Length: 235
Image 1 (tube, rainbow, N blue to C red):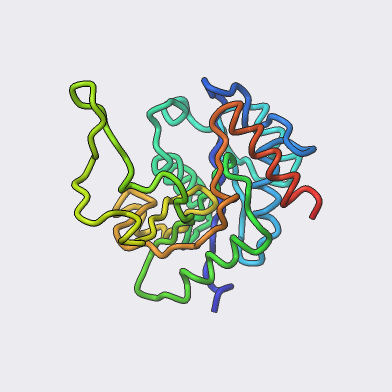
Image 2 (image 1 turned 135 degrees about the vertical axis):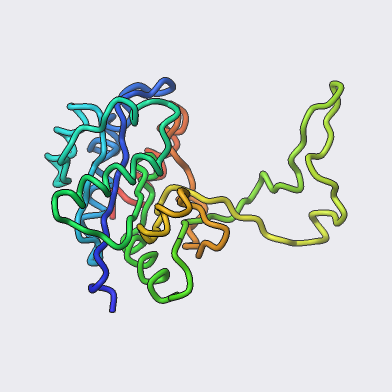
């Protein structure tokens, strides 16, 4: 039942990065950062095509070397800080459709979230396709420290809670989760309609605590490389 659904794995990777220049092809644990997401997608039994959307020729060359398709260079208007993942995904989807390749689902795999275990991608796909009444799946991890009940803002130079705390956190025991870029999976027609990867009714793919780190700056890179050495590089 799974193989009759055509699924496009899209890895968005623009060249510009102010906090960590060149991060998408910066070596980590022996290979460029983006290579990890490409190889994880290629190992999937359910992904039909792996496409990298980038505006950068160097990223494109590296991506092709590791087995991804790079059928275009992303236009300038989709390579700015304000360009959204939805715009990038729909551009890639429409480009592939014009080439005669039609996909029912899009799996967005952020290269800055390389901490995927073997089988995570296919498990996410199966979880969504098994739930016929839903169109979106998002990887989510349990928040361990920064629970929303503990969040504060500064008002008149004082710390005040963001929301009224009617029940103390330690008494409520309610768990909180955060969406991470391990995988966002959505039905393409629904993405066109709602223009977001994170729907009100999204099925979660629960990930482990160590998988929730994402590369944004040099410190993140250092932490993730250490985690990869612990959990992925030797496996």
